[in-house]
Amino acid sequence: AARLVALAQVGMRATVEQLRAYKQRFPVPKFELPENIYTDDFDITEAEKAIKHEYDAVSGEWRRTLINVIIERAPFAEGAMRSAYHMRDLTASGEESHFVAKMAKAGCTSAGQYFDDVRMQTEARRWAQEFNQKGV
Image 1 (cartoon, one colour):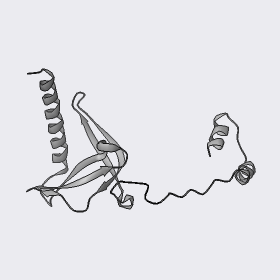
Image 2: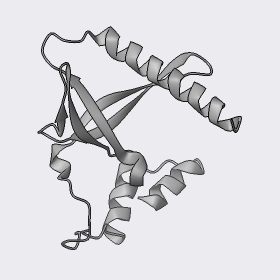
Image 3: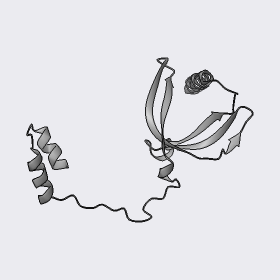
Image 4: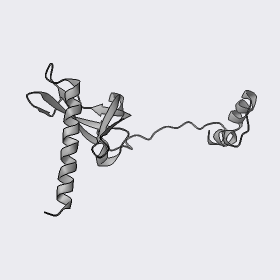
């Protein structure tokens, strides 16, 4: 596949017959994963698409990104209005992939309230960081 990409990048156009002949001369090897090579604790078959919304406190703008996540089925904590679930962002790695997904209980929170909460928490974090940088 890398050779075909390289041919396309230099401007050569291969015909279907040339591609078939190439594949016969250079067959793609079968790739099988060895068992137990991963040490993570999640089942990737549970993955689902999600939109990550991020608020930039400096510019005051929102960004959104399409990501793949795994959310545990059972909440690890519950409050009066929301349940909290462990969530893994499969597009990130290490500690940056761990999140908490908070989901409203039926009829408790509007969609707009989620965005207001994120904006408020991001602004509070920004002010706390600025204060701590002053060394007071």
